[in-house]
Image (cartoon, rainbow, N blue to C red; front, side):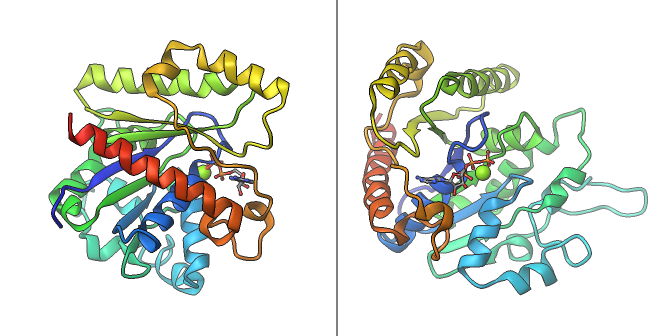
Length: 282
Ligand SMILES: Nc1ncnc2c1ncn2[C@@H]1O[C@H](COP(=O)(O)OP(=O)(O)OP(=O)(O)O)[C@@H](O)[C@H]1O
Ligand SMILES: [Mg+2]
């Protein structure tokens, strides 16, 4: 691989804004239509990315047999287990032990609801685990992009994602409260940056699930865009329209499967690649 892979967090402190859908949608499109090699990391205890992808690749049985607490627990949780117990040292798992191959272009480091069982630590070691895993195993040489789906909560998992990432992308829905999740996110990034430089850069904000630009929506959008923080993060010109099939479609919630959302995701991917490139030439 000629260039260094990039790690991107899909994040917003607000729930239900389309983080997971955009993470899978962009990743799958870049893999299957543009030929990029992608690793998805599911850091959300709701593990929606994992559910969608194991469903798409018919891996449900395998997941139940291999990736749950009672079994081998081949999931991201293994990274967060305490390093030393009283009786034995728990080593960091190797990529082979926890990464699931989906096809020749896509891999998944599965999430699990068991993440809620992980105990927090005071010294911040756990928040560095994802970065450590990526760097110690040179994963940036194996993938063009590593996409992290984040939970909408302040937690060790959002910290871990931000510390590991080169970029963050913020999906938002246009509503009265759009700005709140972003303000909170910015506070978290600034706090992490104060503790130790993390070097994460904004790729931009993507408007999601846009129905149509009514007078009211345009007004909310206008107010939102007046915020300094929105200018700092930047705005994608491309948006995702509201596509009912992404909720109820027979082909699941993968954007490229439906005509309208495929057009949206194609345009977003083009802009995504340009934005990444513009940082490289800086
Ligand atoms: N463009 C779209 N059109 C219609 N429905 C969508 C679209 N994008 C996402 N959805 C639906 O909206 C819901 C929320 O989306 P998604 O799960 O991607 O958000 P999220 O930000 O990851 O949520 P959470 O904070 O719970 O992790 C899902 O049911 C999803 O299928
Ligand atoms: Mg989600």
